[in-house]
Amino acid sequence: MSTPASNQETLLEVQGLQAGYGDVQVLWGVDLQVRAGQIACVVGSNGAGKTTLLRALSGMIRPRAGSMRFGGQTLTGQNAEAMLRAGIAHVPEGRRLFRGLSVRDNLLLGAYLRRDSRADIQKDLEWVYGLFPILAERAQQDASTLSGGEQQMCAIGRGLMSRPTLLMIDELSLGLAPRAVEKLSQSLLEINRAGLTILLVEQDVFTAFELAHTGVVIESGRTAFAGESRALAEDPRVRTAYMGV
Ligand SMILES: Nc1ncnc2c1ncn2[C@@H]1O[C@H](COP(=O)(O)OP(=O)(O)O)[C@@H](O)[C@H]1O
Ligand SMILES: [Mg+2]
Image 1 (tube, rainbow, N blue to C red):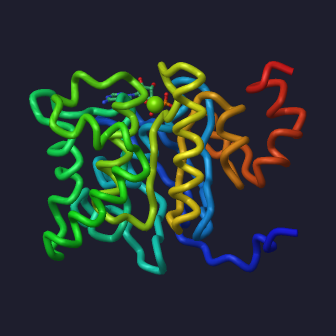
Image 2 (image 1 turned 135 degrees about the horizontal axis):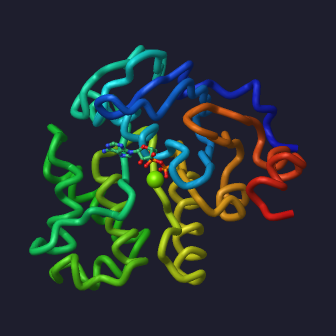
């Protein structure tokens, strides 16, 4: 038997989060709990507000209401730099690598806020190369020459270079071939085993529920369902609406 959920400390706790853009409100009340050491997923239809949620959690947009606690600290309304310093890394939808920069330089950009030694940063770079050997092979190549799956590796690697406690990934599998998704999934499990907590946003609920311990389903900017992935995958309402069964 695995450890009962209640024995694990909550790393991220979001309550009643509301956010949007200008006059457009997108999130109307998101509740989310992520336990330390776990993989959690956020699923929901296109336009449900998943990306907006991650943007609010990484400080790219400011929530209008609700609260966010992380590692015992209240971080609601902090900016992107503060969130990153607190240990939250955000791998954006569409990877967003810098064209014209090498794979290595893209990875190093993830470390730009760190004040520890060059040797420590180099050590983490070696760890990322160990996770994704193809990135070591292509280290000097322009990042735009990578395949979609390799770009996702580079974007995840860049996120890891900030030494986060929580790695948030927006659409791991979008636009990628099944083989690439399978490889990335294995890497996420390895990253999780190394001690990182992961929050995965996925349109593909099958991939999400397979990887994650717990999940939330967002509908029109609100948490509609939450629970263990296994229970969600068996919930008839979730199955009908999201799994085509
Ligand atoms: N920058 C923006 N300005 C205005 N509306 C936006 C912006 N980004 C997203 N939206 C709107 O917010 C809603 C939720 O989008 P998003 O968070 O990207 O959903 P998801 O990631 O679940 O597909 C959509 O209706 C979308 O059109
Ligand atoms: Mg999105």
